[in-house]
Length: 105
Image (cartoon, rainbow, N blue to C red; front, side, top):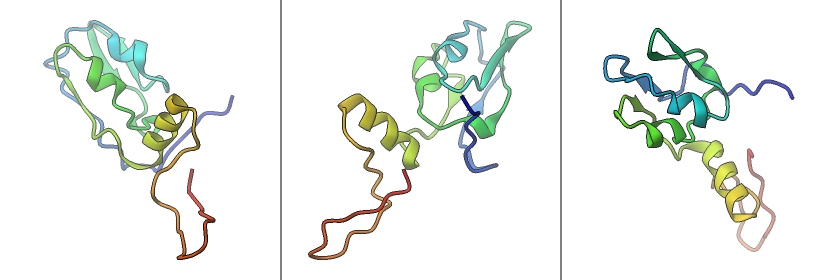
């Protein structure tokens, strides 16, 4: 499977390593292997691979991770997958009287 990259240098992902207890939940739940545990602390390995799904922040018991989840098409893809529907990121165009819609997803 090819490595997925998103827009460079735009991720809202932040890690406060001082708060990290090294539990590794971020490593377990991250679908793009953005984190590793080194010397009992999490470290971000490739921030541009982050799709901002929020799984890491939602599962961090120490609240050491911040990410503005629910932004852009990544959120739409996840929600669509969970609901069994096509992604709907509201970034497409829809003309009056025209039911066709284009989407970046």
